[in-house]
Length: 154
Image (cartoon, rainbow, N blue to C red; front, side, top):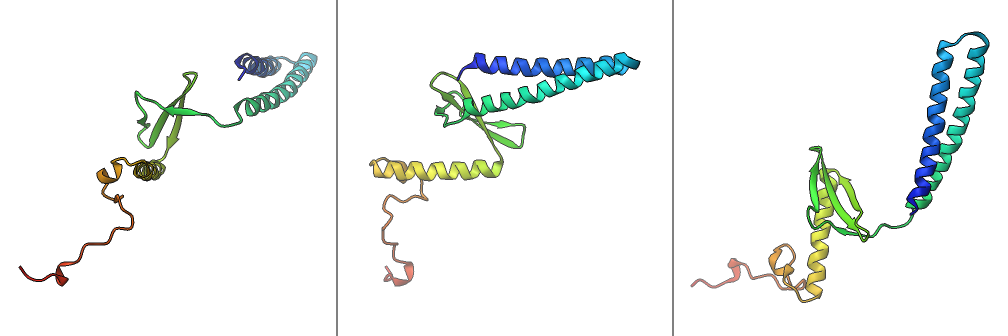
């Protein structure tokens, strides 16, 4: 990503928008031929701003396309965000911090999926998560215990 290019494109868009607003404000207080000239100048800057906005959007799409590879943040991997959202935090290899905001339902679905994948991966690797998580038994094909009805009294 080239931050200087994005900065320059964003600055050009901001300049065009600012100039359009400037000429529009001056036209509002002018009269006669001055008003017409300032309104024309504001329209020209509006056209430039539209073109610059399209260029900025295209540059952002190009720079931000592709996958982002990040690892969970070791300091605070998840936190509450504005009472109704859960924020998941990660860091890229260059130290950039990333945030994904989820609704409570999305956070539960994501957490459940991660626990399931962790247990399955750990079982295949001979680990102990399957023993810790009772909902994921270590042997998927295990026979259920016989019920008390079939046992002889002691």
